[in-house]
Structures are given as structure tokens and as C-alpha cells.
Length: 298
Figure (tube, rainbow, N blue to C red):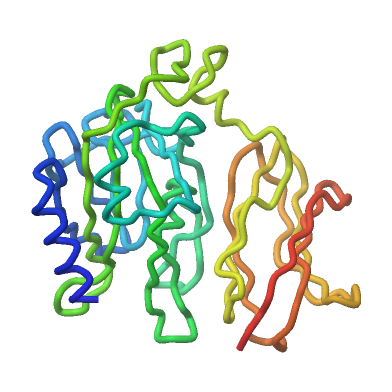
């Protein structure tokens, strides 16, 4: 990992508009706030009502000034297929035509160091995918290199973001290193407030309301032993997730709650089950609405 970090720093030095930052986000309770306007960490006393910050970090979590995290017009566009490479990061100078900026929401992905359980918190569903923990390999954090473009809190700026390390030089976790570059424009898809990345007939919040019930992603897949999955809820409903094997035999019920309209994340720990192919099924008010095939490899 150290060699990779050195290589990326060399690349950053070749392009003067690309900046390198390392954030000590090792606290399990306190967010570290960053402003692209000042290009530095900032102290924010009331983050939910301030537009003085653009992104924030805590452990492996990264949030934007938008949605449930703040009053800003921020958000994230994420592309998991065209992942960052040095060439793409340097050459991309315009927000893609198909881009849609998603605002923050509540997710059940925050580890409580005292109770050793997962809890709810406000973060970005897109930025949560910048890496994942390998629970079978000493909880090593693995990178995805997903392409991220951040919309600033004032809605007028766009920033290419590449988180590429979760560890300090001494190996301590929660030290996030990232590259960012503000040499990118958005010339399309303006919403009624003038923010790029929206539908002209909708405001930012309306543009990001889920229009269906679905399991949007499962990762990693294959997995061992914890499967993470993102899903969306169209309107307040009773949401249940069940797991079945290939023969249709019921294996596990992993979630049963009423939830409001929004985007969510949960996980299935399969350590007490055998390797194999399974179906993750989403039920809304007793009716199945989505089904994903997943593979558990020990």
C-alpha cells in the first residue's frame, strides 16, 4: 500500500491542479470537516445549519453538505464502472451528461465501539462504497476506486474526488488520504435553483426521492462472511429482507422494520451458514419486490 501511495503522490505532483490531503478521521464519534473553498479542514460548531463545509470524514465514512447531513446544495455523483485511473482523473474536465447527484441520507453502517453493534447515522450512500472491510482478513480495508464527483455546499462548484488510502504510514486505520481536483465544469441539467446535476422541473430533494422499491447493490459479491447491500424505499412501508437457498428453502430473516421514503444500507452476516449461492429477497408489506443472487465463499 505504501508503494501505491507514493506512486499516486508522484502523479498528483505532475498535475498542479490536483491536491493531496490526509485526514485524521480515526475518531469513532467526531467528524472532521473540510472546505474546498479554503482547501483546508474547518471547525464547524453547527454542521447541520452551516454551508461552511463541503465534505466530512469519520473512520471510513464520508458525507457531504446535503440531505440529512446539512442545509447545503451538495451531493455526489458516483460511477462504479468507469473507475478512477490516473489518466481518467487527469483528463475528465466536465461532469458526465448522465450524472445525477445524490444527497445524503441515514444509513445503518456506523460501528459503535462500546456496544460493538451497528447504528444509524447520516452519510452519503455513494461515498460509503469507496471501500469495504474484509472481515475474514483481519478487517483489512479494500479500495474500489469508484469515480466520485462532489457538488459543493453552495451548489456552484464541482470537485473530482479520489480516496485512495485508509491507513497512515504507521498502519493506523481511519487516516483517509485523497486526491481532489476542481478543474471540472458542469454545463447541463440545471435544476430550477441553478444547480447542475438536476432535473429542471424538480428541486434537489425531490430529484433524489426514490421512485421504486429495489435492492440497488450488493457488495462484495462473492462475499465472506458479511454481505453489504443498499436499497431504496419509495414510501413508508414495512420492509423485510429474507434469505433463501437455491432450492427455495428459507435460510434467514435479517431485517423487519417500518421505514420512510429514502435510501438505506444493511448487511447480512453469514458466518453461521455454509458456502453457496443464495437469494436475497426484499418484501414490502408482505409482497416480494426484488430478488438478488449472491455468492458466499468461505
